[in-house]
Length: 334
Image (tube, rainbow, N blue to C red; front, side):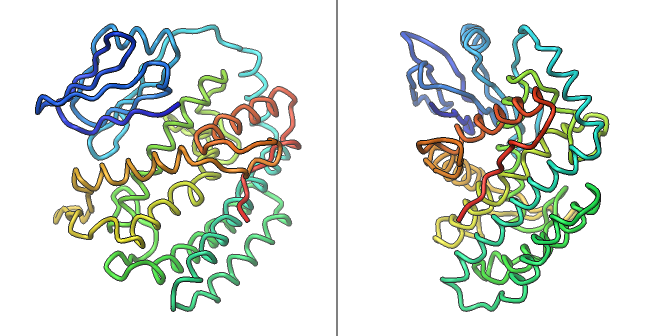
C-alpha cells in the first residue's frame, strides 16, 4: 500500500480498467493498480474525475489538497458512522490534568530520546564537537520524568529542541547551515524542507485520527485553540525527528540535493523549495514511509513507517476507550 503524490501541475487523475491513471500536461501517463492505493496528496493545480472521487470515498482512500508549497487546503472525506462514545471519552480525558501529564511525559521524552540518538548517529561521521549539546539534551530528557505539569514538560522539550537544532547546524553540510528552528516562514533551506515534511506527515496523521472516530482538535499536550488540530500536533511530536529530520539530513548529507534548488523572498525572508526540490523531498519521504521498522515493541514483526502510524493511532484510540494512557508506548529508536 502506498501514497500517491501529485506534484506535476496541470495533471489529471482518472480511472480505467482497475487502474488509477495520472495524465500529465506533457501528454505522458502513469498508472497504478487501484488496490495498491492508500492515500493521495495533491500539490497545486491538478484535478480528479468524479469516478476517481467516488472510488476514493467508497474505499476510504484519503485525499489531501495542498498548495505547491505545502499549505493545507482541505481533504476529500465521506460521511460515515461515527463512534460518538469515543469522542465523549476523548473530551473527558483531555480535561484530566494527570492523564494529560502522563501522555506528555511519554511523548516528549521519546521525542527528545530520538533526537539524541539521531545526533549520535551523525556525530560518528562528523568532525564537529557536539558533546555539550548531547549532554544537555540528555539532562533535559531525564528531567521530564520529574515534571509536575504539561507546561513544565514543554519547557524542557523546548530547551532540548534548541540544543538539538544547534547541534544539527554544526554537523550539516556547510551550505545548509542554519540558525535554529524557524517557521512561518522558514528562513533557510533546511527549515523549509523539514517544515514541508512535517506538513506531509501531519495530514497523514490527521486522516488516521479521523478514521478512528477521534476529533483532531481535542488534544492532550497542545492547548486547544480554534481551527488548530491539537491532537494531530500531539501525535506529530513522536515522528518529527525519526521520520522527517533524519530523512532530510540523509538527503543533504548524501549530496542528493543542491542549495541552488532554493530561492529567497526578499520581502519576507522566506526560503522556498524549487519544483525539483519538492519532488526530491517527496520521493525521499515516501521511500522512508515504506521502510520497514521494528520499533513498535508490542508487534512481533516489522511494519512500514506508514503502517506504524496506523498502529500508534489505533493504540491511542484504545487508550482513550480505556480512559488511561498507561499502555501507550511511543516509538524509541536505539
